[in-house]
Amino acid sequence: MARQYIGNVGKVCNSQVGVYAGLSRADKIGLVGAKLYLPKKWTTDKKRCEKAGIPKEEQKYRTKPELGLEIIKELEGAIEYDWVGGDSVYGNSPELRKALRGLGKAYVMDVGEELQVCVEKPQPYVPKGSGRGRTRSRLVIDEERIRLKKLIGQIEEREWKTIEYREGTKGKLVREAVMKKVWIWKKGTEEIEEAELLISRKLDQTEVKYSLCHEPKGELSVETALFRQMQRYWIERAFQAHQRANRVASISGARLEGVATSYCVDNDGVAFHLRNASRKCGKLAVNVVRRCQIDVGKYPQKQVG
Image (cartoon, rainbow, N blue to C red; front, top):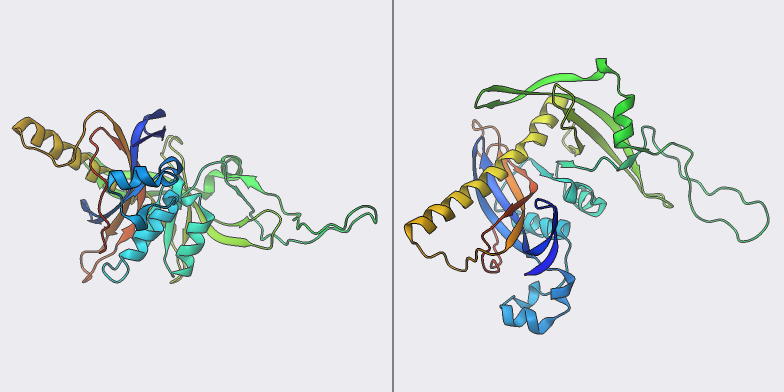
């Protein structure tokens, strides 16, 4: 427990933050893994960690993307899935994206509108010096780096495709979407990441979402990419179901082990999605979202598979 910023609340509050894994098929989902995010204030206070009963192997600082990657690795071999998804906390991590590519994982990861990309492959080089002062060694590029919120303004209306991506309670859900190949250059280095950028929005051009996509098995269609982008909805449903269960238990007088009611918890959920019921294992995805709720449990024990 520590005072930290919680995005869902929009302020700093006394809270716990967790990274969760869930398995889903269509509109069904269940949580299958969890890790507690420990702020540096905790990891540098070993006595506090010991008093709280946190296992020694967990008493080290890790970012949320690092915890998400740990969950993915722990579930390797126990669950088959087709892609990894996550919100911008995870999609904005170049280290996580690189690790997923190294593991051969497909992904559709949300990123923030401030991310800078190139629409042409960058060609880093060391500029010639003037002959005076220190020799220049830092790489530069001539290609323009543009923020996503500006890039969307350069997309012509004819490029947008209207797609039905899921059945809703009131009919088919529809968004406009477009795919663009982009490159992310790590400033001053030769490191360049190639990815497909998916941009989607509602038909009234609101609620714009940006995602970086990677599919090692071949070309990814805009329809498939949009379906994957929107699957994070189901892990939100998992947390809602958990809250309802807690409320019912509270009303009935049942005692919930390790549950407090005066704090806020921010849940980052990793969700595995089964998409195609006709296959033996179906289509799965790992997904990460942020969720705030009132009930707080004890530190979750390490879960493998």
